[in-house]
Structure formats: structure tokens, C-alpha cells
Image 1: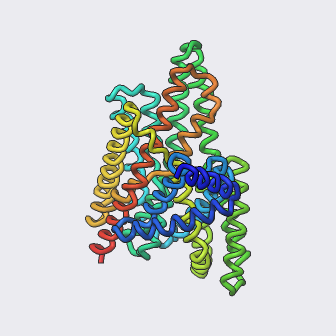
Image 2 (image 1 turned 180 degrees about the horizontal axis):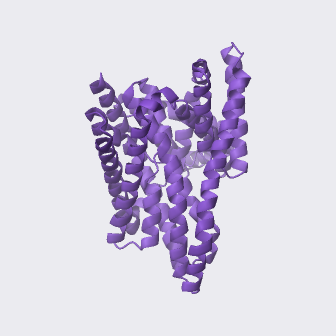
Image 3 (image 1 turned 135 degrees about the vertical axis):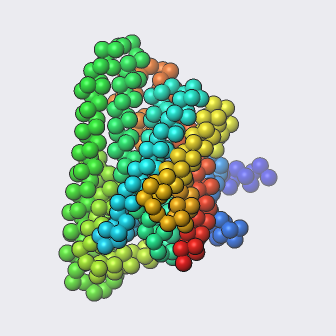
Length: 427
């Protein structure tokens, strides 16, 4: 028996050296476990994530860690198309009727989530700089999960318009909020080091404003790049009649402009959202661009969520401090998200069905949250912190990963329920 087990491990290691085997097994396993998830009334996405968790290095190791770099391209492409789809919902005619309300709901839920999580963690004796950073990260949602659920249900209507609007604006607002908070927290952390108040004063007066300015410039340039991308896609496909030609041109342009955004350290999410917005507003005829992408997206979405599952590590749950702060973070974030949307809807005088259900769709959390916390680890700030502060940053990463693990399993079923209820009651 032991010999058979060893031979299976050797075969696994041999086959997993080839990226095609890795991608193929992810798609097949994702399909079967996704189908099983649907049979027990869970969203297909949850099955994809579980498939990734099972195949990841922490369980079976079918998808080895050295494949992460190769698979990153898949993630970038998937996020690009997801963002393009969200941007395609920003039709000016729709936004005129609900734009102000969506903006109010988004701002209220972002700020309330930030305040509730930051103050809550601080009251539970987490040092203020880390509490502020986690509060900002908590405001991020996972647009990929929302888009995939809506598309699987083929849902349309006012509820979906509000949902897409809030989810799309949420990540843009989250990035801006995080950039400001990061500048403030950096000054506070450096003020705790041996350099003392002088360093803190210098950072807060100069470094802080530089970071904020850099973040705002990044947002602006991402939107400008997206505008150019949208214009190029529009004029490249305007006279085309064949849907295959339209799909090839659109996907090629999404690849090119996503790569440009990544290379120049801009936001591919904002770039492609802006492109989708430009495309749909240039002409109603451009709906065919988004329709042409539909056959291409299911396998890409499946891969995206399976890959996300491989990055989850359930081992962090056994660490007592991570478990305690992680559960507090998850609970406070849920309160802030639902409460913020609820209050925002009341202030905007949005109908009751949206008020009751929209907040439940804000729970999924994935790429943006992980990206922000890993950005802290990769920043020059880490070279100026002491060992204790670096340890706290590492704990923050694990708290966010725990939150992603829980919210990506619990969030999609709750979102699916809310979308169904919202659409049913709306009719």
C-alpha cells in the first residue's frame, strides 16, 4: 500500500511539471465539484473554490506552488474580463436615474465598514495602525463572485443594476481609502521605531502626501488608459459583423491593455471597468461585444476561482490569535457592509426590497483584499520596521486570508440567496 502511495505521489509530481496538466485538472475537478455544489444548493463558485483548496499545496499538492507564477496570467485575464463586464453595466441612461443613489450607498458602506472594523479591532486591543489598515482592507468586495453568480442566474433588473453599480464603485473607493490610510499608518508605525518623532513628522508631512498623490494619480491614469482601450475596441469592431471577429479583437485588446496596466503599475481593474463603460456608452450596438465574450468566460471564471482556492491555507485557523482577530474582523466587516448599504439605501430612499437584500451581496472578499495586504508586505516600509512590527504585518496577512477563506465559502451562497430574493420581490 505504501509503495502504491509513493508511486502516485511520483506520478503527481511528474505530471504537475507541465502547466497544461495543471490547467486541465483544475478545469475538470472544478467542473465536477462545482456540479456537486449545485446539487446541494450551493453556488457553483463555492465548488470551484473547494476544488482549488483540495488541489492546493496545503492538501493534495496536485497544483504545486511553483505553478503560481504561470497561473497569474489566467487571474489577470479573468479579472480584466470581469471588470470589462462590470463597466459595461454603466450605461449613462441607467446611471442618470440611479447614479446619485449608487454613489451615496457606496460611500456610506465603505466608510461605515472602515469605521466599524477599525474601532472594533482597536477596542479588542489591536494597535491602532494595524486596525486602521485592516479597516480599509475590509471595505473591499469581490466583484468576480458577484458577476459570476448574476450570470449563472441570468438575472436582470433594477436590483442587479444597483448591485453592479455598488460593487464596481466599491473597489475604486477602497483603493483610494486604503492609499490615504496607508500613508497615515506608515507615519504612525515609523513614529514607533527608534527614529522617533522626527521620522514620523517627516513621513506624515512629506511621505504621506506623496503616497496620497501617487494613489490619486494611479487612479486617474488607470481611467485614462481604460478610456483609450474602450475607444480602440469600439472603432476596431464598429464595422465588423462576425461575432468571432469581434471576440478575437476584444480579447486581444483586453490582453494588451491589461498588460500595459500591470507593467506600468496601474490598476487593471479600473482600466477595464473604464473601457467597458466607454464601449457601452459609445453605442447601444456595442452590446454585441459583450455577447461575443460569453462563450469564452465560463472556463476562465472556473479557473479564476479554482486558482483562488489553491491559495487558501486552512492551517492559519489553528493559530489562536489569528482565529480570534480573524473572526472579529469577519463579523465586524459583515456588520459594516450590511449596515452601510442599509443606511445608504434609507438615506437615498431606495425601495425596501433593495434595502433588505443588497447588503448581503457585499460579503464575498478575494483578490483586491489579498492584493492590498500583500502590497503592504512588498512596500519599502517593511525595511524600516522592527521585528515586532513585521510580525504584526504577517499576522494581518493571515487575518485577511482567513477572512477570504470564510467569506469566499459563505459569501457566494448568501449573495445568491439575496439576488434571487431581490429579483423575485422586485417583480
